Amino acid sequence: MVNIAGLIINIIMLLLIITLVILGVIYNNQLNICIKSQSPLCYNISCPCDGTDSLPCKGNSKKKYADGQWICSNAPRTVVDNTGKTVKTIY
Image (cartoon, rainbow, N blue to C red; front, top):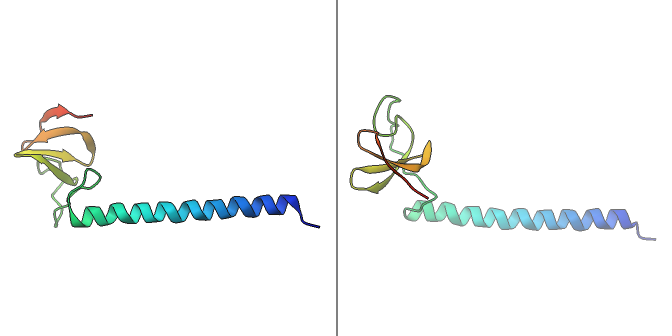
């Protein structure tokens, strides 16, 4: 006789494994996009990292928004200029 509870648990585990594999593939694709080109999901990190007192992002990773404007990883909805002053809020 088949145990119904065991069967249900096995089906749930199989669905979880399939979901994790799909999420892994999606994450890997996004990582490959970040490696090959600039994406809104990625930040370019300068090495060596900037000091905590350096502008515009005070040591955090940054992504170029426009000429002289940056988006910092610690405030991804804010655009700052080269001096670290807020230019505008996006989204």
